[in-house]
Image 1 (spheres, rainbow, N blue to C red):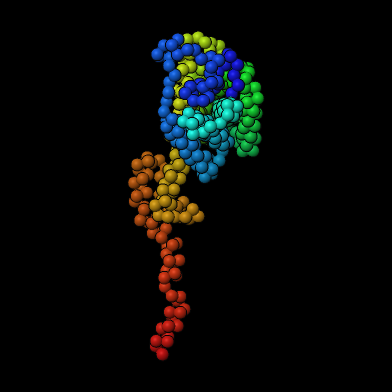
Image 2 (spheres, one colour):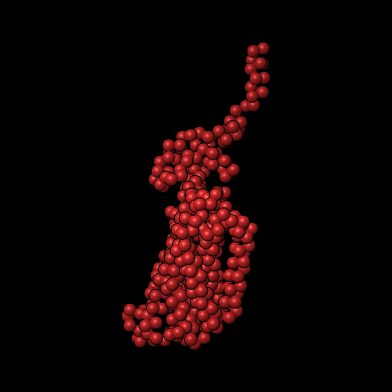
Length: 391
């Protein structure tokens, strides 16, 4: 990333020992001028890789669960799916960059300096796309919950699946445009200012929505309860979803706030000793960002019984296919699985253990006829052979 004297690379800060570190020469102070507490914080490459892989697997499971379960085919869960894709993007890009830095540091990958700058631009644009997509997806979920609670009787007319798809398409088109602009104007500090401003604007919008939502929710419930066709169960489910997404928003702020504070200090006081001490822990802020991608799927699973049930079925079905060699086209898995809704993981495993003999017996007959045909003579030839012996 081409930087001016007043700016730092978003991602190259934590690679001081790599060939990319020359990008920091404009703002790096001599090592003897730094106190020991401000030395660059180094985190093992394996930590980034493990978090990236765990986040990738978790978010893939979330997307598969939403696709598999028709009860989750609603606008809110489509927005959750968009958020999961954004989480995957930031984790995969961070893990991939860690691999590239490791190869460059150990001289296993030798490329020219301008190509390193281009790679850094790509990684910067990917984090820009992911953070904007995360913010927009969270904002879309907040609007969806707002409509669900305050316009419950007209929700299905207001928020249709088609409109949700158009919103998601618009979000990712906008995010891709932001990533392209980020690369084109990477040497301009105004790009970082716009990114930070967008972060605070999105937070202000979501905070106002949630504040209004929870302040007026109780009085709204009392008014709508008198109307015909009111469904208290649906209203409680909507409030539970709103609480879940408030937790998501809180985790997002906690995990991303240090990174954006780093960007603010990077622009406002790049040579100040205290600012540099804070910025020297950039690796930890990246770990927090990746932890956000790991925590989000856990929140979906623990707060949504339907999601939890579907995730259990996916994991257990996959395990059964591996153990018993059941083909992917075998639908017995979906038919013969016990009801595991409301059960803990340990109880679900015990329930599956009780059904294993039945599942094993239903899985075997599909392979036995082919084996018997290959080892035994044809039935007609056997009867003909018996007739010859009797004659």
